[in-house]
Image 1 (spheres, rainbow, N blue to C red):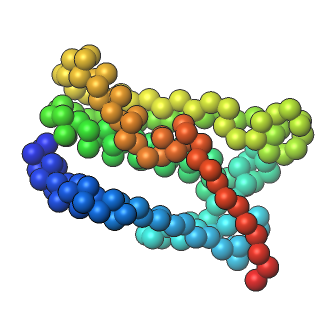
Image 2 (tube, helix red, strand yellow; image 1 turned 120 degrees about the horizontal axis):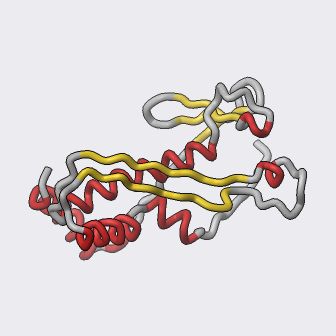
Length: 169
């Protein structure tokens, strides 16, 4: 797909959102169940069932998915799609590329070993290695716009309000 095809595909969507801003508000959902054996959560991914469990650093077997890894994978997936879309829109040719994310955790926090240890990632590093002939000015623009439009990156960076509730079923 080239930039013109992408713009043509998105034009009616953008026009609809301009004329009816409420149409742009969509609620994405994720669901899980606790009927998996062990300390695990079974997830409905829309493609297949997945089971998340404890990371080996907290006593897990390593056989289940780790939610921390899944967060980084979601960041890589979103950033990868976004950088491709922005490069396409700006007519920046990408022959290939790799995206990676690393996050630093202190598991003393989540295990309650040290009250001063944070729970969650202390730092996340997102890296793009792109095979392109584009000049540095174009790459700077590509990175700036990728950061701006990547939903997962912006969510992690901005820390939105999160509402939590618990009910008895």
